[in-house]
Length: 90
Image (cartoon, rainbow, N blue to C red; front, side, top):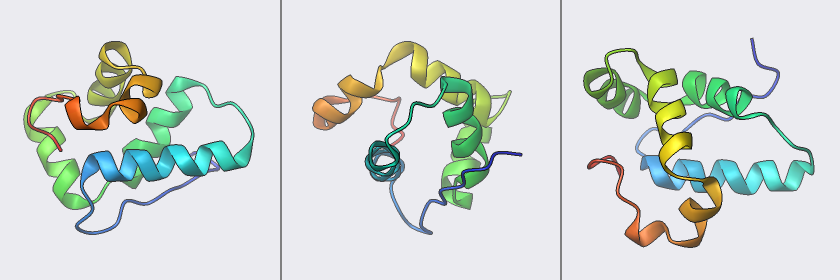
């Protein structure tokens, strides 16, 4: 069970959640391993985001999260959020 939880608001778009989560992590002034970030995201998503991910990625949230880290780095995500394509998941 992760020590850090950071819930997504009920109707908050996924990229807004990630941006808000990244801002919060920056304020903590400590580094997190990617698997730990994925774990926090996996338990913190709202039902809308969770449903979309479970429908799209058969292995669930962790598969999506690790895919997301492989394809897009967080620095690219937050520098050019307008041009980010995550397969319709915004």
